[in-house]
Image (cartoon, rainbow, N blue to C red; front, side, top):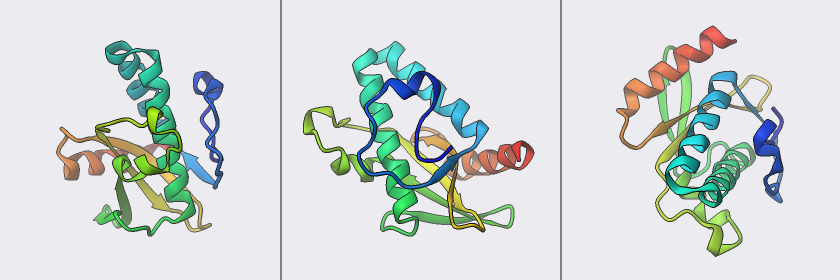
Length: 143
């Protein structure tokens, strides 16, 4: 996927800045799950706002993968970045659309072609190390 969400999410307003990134199938599935749960618990407007924040975070990472706030870990012989989406809140232009307490981190790697591969998402309540390892394993199978 090149910098845009697909399917049901395509109806959302696009993020004005675009940068290339790829969303793996496991990440795509998790994103759908996150947004469905967000809508169930908090309503459609919150789902749309959370989708905007998640998209903004993916674009931010695609533009500057080695940005401040990324925590780098070694997992299964790969260098993996973990970026809390809260760090992209201020990049959502309309302050009324900002999520107050985002709960997810973006898990990614920089591919050999230089494009960011978004591998998955980790909720704050998950054990980060275990969740990242599971995400990396899922993506080895998916590729």
